[in-house]
Image (cartoon, helix red, strand yellow):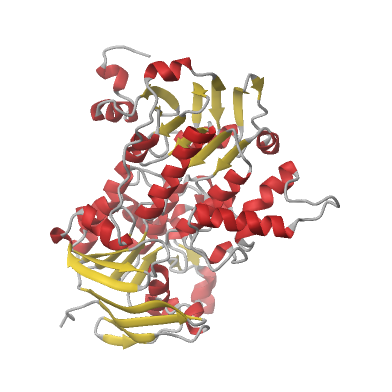
Length: 533
């Protein structure tokens, strides 16, 4: 007989060194139910998941109070492996993939399929069997097809863009047998709208098979679209559990942050005539970028001083490649001029020295020194490139570093224990703010920001977007924002460049019709208009 709940967490409480971070959380998930947990960064979602999966950090810090019940049985797990054996899987926000392995090898990792050979038969040893790559590839392809992924399963993970890597994480969990509950931790944070739609459809299909799904996300429209129930937590407290149909997005946001939050239209957007009259600060001609999965095939683009220019497009079409190529993170060719002078696009340090800053979409792989402190991460680039934060003897001026870090923590509302906290221990959204703080410390004239609101809750999202708007409006900083969130680009940008199939499809004002954005992003705009660009 099937148990009523696949997961129950009763009155969960947790302290870290006298600081109570969970204050009585209750969670009940039925088989086939999609249940969302929402809350701001730092609300306690990660700690709750660490408890569910028996993570060592919980047991090393005094354990927890309360009860975890999986499929009707009370569980006191000492490791994530124990929980996984009970049929609970997790899709992480940050990737746990082996780059040099193929997609199929990553999906089948630790569950490889083997076939006997002469040697294994002779010695009667399964450990001497060969990998059955044909069957592994076939089963991996089934998982990829479930997610609508049109990609060869024999492709190496190392060359995939971030959005594709997220799908591989999900495919690996889908492929497992005996799954009763799947935890999705920000699975759509790096996906475009079309990719996210495919994933949400896959989640519904899994739920229809009786698998319970715990959905952790900051995208409240997705919560409304697919979930049955929502649990809202704030500052470690259980605020409310409610059927999704009974609350609006605005009500959920208000419960999350204790105040009403919305991302409003930037009223200071420049008109087309005002933009045309501005000085051109960045000239891009025939830019080609060899970024695997995000190749740019030759674009021309002019960026005006003090504007916020958005770069949009579907995943894999090259939007991410533009900033990465200009900043020298991937091989690129073409001519780029900054303030009238040629820019060495394959020399990152030279670009940084010219007051150009970059916030990467890959915060852990590129943006952060994970074992370094918050203050070290904030100051490191400025110290290396511009010799800031050094005294007359060439040594680090620690009081100056500390003061500046404290200022940035306050300005960007970085939720932490202090400037010396290792960035690895921050939530994803707060790590993103540290990346932004590092870029702002360089006092840039031109700022490239890729996926600035990835994995950030709605309150922090508004703070970051308002901050970018303030930089352009009050400090005349030119901001180029690459994002999968078209609605956010339309809220803050003066113009939005659409990249399709590695080329510039066109540039639109944020007030353009929805159909124009849709046609450009699909590469059909000029056919629709009856001509070519």
